[in-house]
Length: 519
Image 1 (cartoon, rainbow, N blue to C red):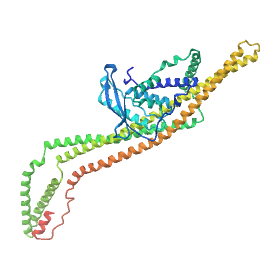
Image 2 (tube, rainbow, N blue to C red; image 1 turned 180 degrees about the horizontal axis):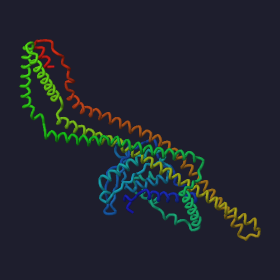
Image 3 (cartoon, helix red, strand yellow; image 1 turned 120 degrees about the horizontal axis):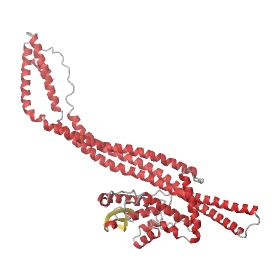
Image 4 (cartoon, rainbow, N blue to C red; image 1 turned 45 degrees about the vertical axis):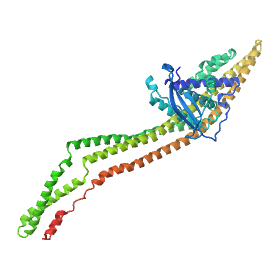
């Protein structure tokens, strides 16, 4: 199998976890400690190192072509690497699967599956870079995870000795479905019985049946309700927030189109090209009107009719001059087009920055909820194992009761009846011991899940608050730039204000009428 192939999906993960559950059951029955109880190792929680995934390199050809990523461990972000290893994409997936096996119930950061439409897309720079970011985020999440400290798989993954890592993968391969066939022949019958009992319980649960709960069952009902409610809220919040982010993108597109259209109108008609000729004519008209008004005032007492007619001419001239003044104070369409072009560019940059600060954290919250679902699924698997042993106890108790009943009604029992009774009682006692051990592991996983749910609540709360603080900062920062562009139009287009109503002049002086004309 090409481990870098994008056909690695959740079904493969489920198959792997089924195999791990079978291995864990074999450990219980064999008396060995289950993987979840592996020694803690030499983790030091007081030192936080800086991890980075960089320098992807392609090796091989054809179906053997794959990408190696360099992992640097530094004491600080800009310090020299303390150690460096190279790992394939499938190695990260192996670590993810092993962490679930070693710490079932932990909310482990997921590695999002990136699908490639074809082989060319599979090794494109965009996909490789996207994977690099996801892998770096995964490792940094694992690094600070309080439940994963001391996991053996982490030590093996970061070991600079290739032999150590290869031995760990060989001991715990990603796919080991045939391992159950290697069990001793004398135990095959019991393992087959266990498998069929577990299969019947699975079928019953799929049909709507319920597993027998432990004392903390009510707490997990609350966890399930909380996750369902949180998933619905996060989905609605993500949809509304992405809409707000995309408003800037849509506004940028519309303003760009508007600016282009206005610029096209300027090409068809540009008033500035005819201002000089029109200005000469306006000056002549003003001079003529002023002279006329002056003459009217001189002959005002002799001819009221003439005064009235010339006074109307004066008012019309005044309105024309006001219109000319307003037109000169308004910005040109070319200026307006340039302002809209600037507004479009600002909204585009605003969208890109906002999207970069908002979208990844929202995706991270959605992925965290998926991780929480996987943690609950791991507990459900332990619960299923415990219920399987409980059912075996019931079955074996029924066998013992049947043998006792037969012995009571038929005292003349066969010579091997005592041996059958002894074997049945031993089998029942073994089932009870295994059930107790499975219950202990279920309790351990349950407590881990509950701790993780408390941590998840605080993490989601903090992430959402930071998202909207960052969103507000972007709005404030770009609002100043947008206001500056809008003020280029609002300031230029303020004009002289509304016209003042003219009152009838009572003065016969030339200066008085001239003042009225200027107003």
